[in-house]
Length: 111
Image (cartoon, rainbow, N blue to C red; front, side):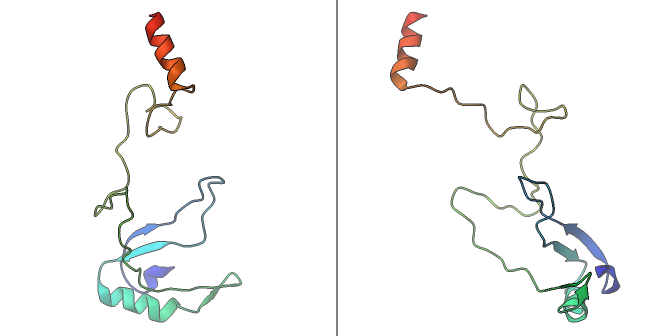
């Protein structure tokens, strides 16, 4: 639909982690600033399927502590090994064993 305003380079619709359904907003990248401005002019306030659209330029948010935001990064690369590959989603880190530190030391001593 937004290609009426110009050449769309990329579109990203974030999904809810729990349900997998779209969250109700999207990020669209146009090939130029003039096309983006035209999309805002044409589509901001337009009604589609009974819902009013809000179209505006994305704000650059400052980085959050503990997260790195790099240009063009789509997340960590796919992992191989016990937690990566197959049809199961990959985990970012191995599962931490439960139990107290005291119990961990006792298990180490018994080896």
